[in-house]
Length: 223
Image (cartoon, rainbow, N blue to C red; front, side):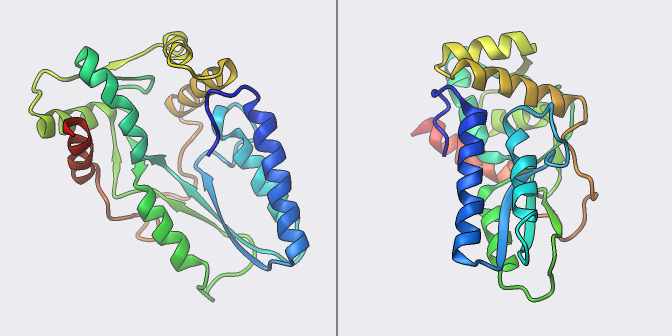
């Protein structure tokens, strides 16, 4: 994982991506399942996930490689980052529009999807598969679920303007470029530029829901 306190995120991701692609070439690997992101279809304007577009292109350029790109929604695990504000200020604070439905997926479900896809003989070439969680959910609903699990009925969601989000992240120790890229990603999600391109289906729907995951968040909060 990238250290979000270190500057130079995009350059670091480029170097890492180039090294990964070269390793695939050198080893003669013929089949890869690559964890990407919704929004990887966009060449720019997507902040932290911008390198995913470039890496998909690098891997597709390798001759003879069967490549499945798993474009995942927002990680449920990112919600752990909301807990300090819940404890200190009694709010869930982020940059997303309060009622915007967002596909949220547990990383364990992404791992299961990848493990099933890699040996599956039913695909070749360069397919894209989305991994979207059980349903789209807004931050207002996430906050209500967390309020129930924590027995904090007054818990509210607060949307931070982009400039405020970037300031808060920088004060928390994020590198300046990482804070700006996070703001850019949030803005892209709010504007609908980071979204499913295939539509939800049985294949892209995974079992872990936010209601259940909120129990895990509550356990961490109360630990």
